[in-house]
Length: 541
Image 1: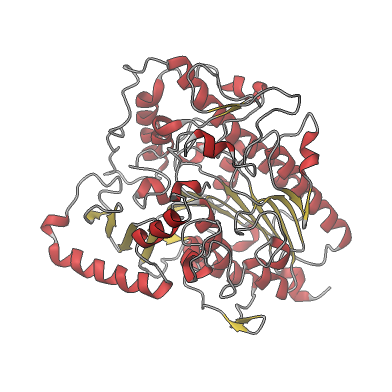
Image 2: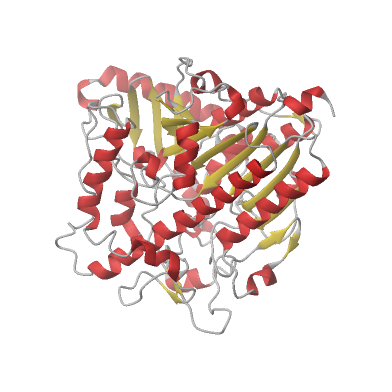
């Protein structure tokens, strides 16, 4: 065993799917998340950490340290005829964290949702085993039933039949497979550090959970989203997650008041299932923590937890029902025992069981994103703000602290490489790759003031730039808005009209960045989709 390998930290990255900023207990939520709360208490919470507004782009950025367009996934992992930033699959101009750490002597494994290849049926260069992972168990597509997911894959082999087990529940299976890796690695190669990537699908729709987990939240949501948004806001202030001058954004204009809601029982049930999905994931994270402790590896393991984008306001079906039914990769039409699956957000159907397929909707997503506006897909705070927990007992962190420096996904890989004393290569398979875009967060995590940087986003024409206290943001086809993000993180007071010169300066800065990473006008990508008989909402993730 080399001295270097014995001191290098293990790395465990856990990614939630479509989870809002304030859902966790340690970020103000009422959902029972004791294990993540414990990691936060013993580690560091970041309040201004940002993802991208969508599943695949966030995964691409997290794993490569690049902006998603540079990695080839400007919108989603879908088969696209364009080149460059919109191929819809990991390209040869990037290298993954697994590839870099494997070169440094790490054992590598992925357990969960991949969603980085536009071909989910035939092994290719964008599948996990060709991107630095020694082993893989999970799904290759963007979402699916928790009781019977499609594209379930072990290494390069489809194992959908494993889900026919009557007790199969995907979140638990991801946990079981991750625990198995930890134990097998400890038994066979304890001298090697490991990198384990665990991207859960929870709490992405469909709303699926076991009845005993749903029942734990009986009555919790009966007071509705208006009261609960106020309560979360108060806890966020008490915890110090938000500054004292922070304000709660107004209820989303499309959402009715809880008082006027006519289907209260059904609505409360939707949020109960969503909460159960998160609690089951937290329980799984507790199993991972217990395994690390039992193996004597907890103290020298970096554990990172974050979400891939803000909460999702998407209805189900996202596209028209008949086209939705054709998505065999994400949808089974019958349960394992032959019952028909009822698809859609129908108030006559209580969600949660395996014969339902629905989402929790805009109203509850507005709660999940407290105190922010808008949702997944947008580059306003509700679409890109993520809880971020970093835990490493041996890492000389400012344990139990809450850090307010602004960072985004491109900063994760430089952080891990610095902690692991691993190098970022100039080439992959002889092809020159993009240099890392972000910067290490270790100094900030250790209580020092990090170097300020400018942050950038673009997704489906939605765009933003954040420089210091200022954020310029737009919705596709709408004018730019300007916010002093240090005083108005909820983006309620647009200052663009009073600061025309600053708006122009930030817009020019954003445009230079967009050109450098391969952003193309969203109208142009829409033309491509329409020629193929598709709309961009056909890409689900």
